[in-house]
Amino acid sequence: MKKFFSKRWHGLPIGVISLVLAATLVVGGASAAVLLLGGTGTVTVQEAITITASTPTQGTVGGNSWSAMTWSVSTYPGETKTLTVKLTNVGTAGIPVTIALTGDSNLTKVIKVWNGSDYETYGSSYTIPGGGDGYVQFQITASTSSPVGDKYLNLSIDR
Image (cartoon, rainbow, N blue to C red; front, side, top):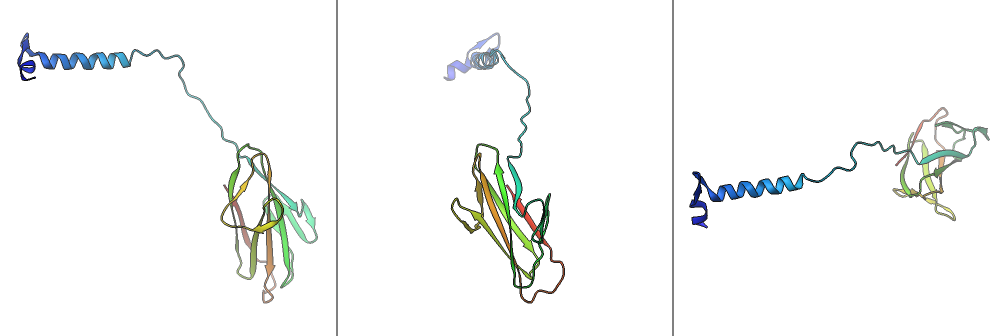
């Protein structure tokens, strides 16, 4: 090996010439591929989940109302009201969602989800089946010591 690098051709070491030649052939061979299709494209991901009120429906039903993403419930101390929403997945894959209902401490807030045969208490995630529906119930109870007046809640359903 030592003799290989010590031999010279026109003053240049044969070993160095061989390495440069080999590298040139490898790089040249890799770039000899023919491009058949090139360019850029756009992929638009659409929201697959739509939300509609099951009870109450649009307008006012029994003192409860639902319009767009604003809802209101009229209740008395110690009374429970339930709001049910339907989540429809128009996609083909099941999509997990997280649900939160936060706000006034004078209100007890319970979230239940449909398991196919009954409502069960919500855990940490709920999957809306592909091409199917999921149902979420929000049960709101005013404490018996709750002062009269408006109480505010924040509802969020995220994926």
